Length: 417
Ligand SMILES: *Cc1c(COP(=O)(O)O)cnc(C)c1O
Image (cartoon, rainbow, N blue to C red):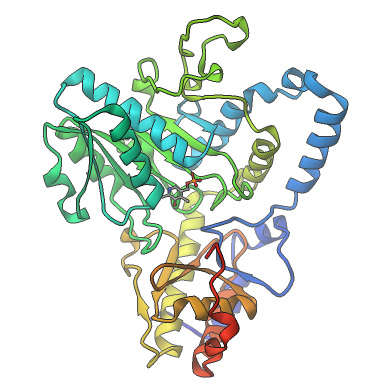
């Protein structure tokens, strides 16, 4: 039995090894923020850092800052900060572009390796219901590569069986964006590689949320998001990972000048950088990259295992409270119970989930909604307390018991859910 009393929650908070991290975030008063899986909140040090980047580096030092402030090395510098969070070496990770663009680059690189191994390997495998951009980008890549290429989506229980000598690459999202189902990265990578295909992991809902060990799993490529659990700010740059063994030979088709071995020689012919920088495309968005770099400092002195332990305990508490206080409301818990099988958010299904979430937000509990009927609640131990979780379920119970969500103002859909 998981204790569900307010006193227990307050006691957990008193003994929380991450308790003082909340002070590193600038959270609005009266808000319980449970959407760090979609947009991480603002770390306090980011605004002053941006002010200094704008006023000193940009306004005063102008173009000299490419050297004096080392703007040129932001991609690898930020990559090196992300590397320990995902079980990679600093040289294997770079900050760049968006997750969507990075998916294209790494999958294209994997397809190219596959083509060198066998001209028959022209299939990309993923799962139905993966995050849409992952599927869309693979559809676009297959179309671009030519008639032989195709994206095939296979239910997760059948993925390994589906990998054959026609398979170039398997692309999976480690933690599912709706259900929070988490794959066993090591087993799947090994099984895919045993059949001669390459493995690409999307870590958008994993980086900064759950311990990830790309090296331990022998992953070939990975991508991930900077604005979710990494708190890099809206539309923050993303990152990508290339296993060390592939660094010298991986080639991606978006061969922009920042991927050139010496961009400032201004040569006509492209020659890739010898290292991870060959995955870069064009000029870094310095303001956004600086925000992400600053935000990542919050992780400097924390162990992902400590974060994980607390987020599992908080999600366990949440599910127990939902079962206890929301009986009879026809609410489903979509996220698996098993610790090894889930990431760091919990999804509840409810026919009127959209209206309920709008009412919740209006009452100070911010989660989000995913079509057709899922309410998502993110557990982000750096700033969420056990008492927050307790109060959030109390407010949710009130909204359901009193049918507050039926108010017409909670039913109009905005462009972004
Ligand atoms: C959030 C997310 C993305 C985001 O892609 P963008 O290019 O940043 O819009 C991609 N894949 C997954 C699995 C995600 O969760």
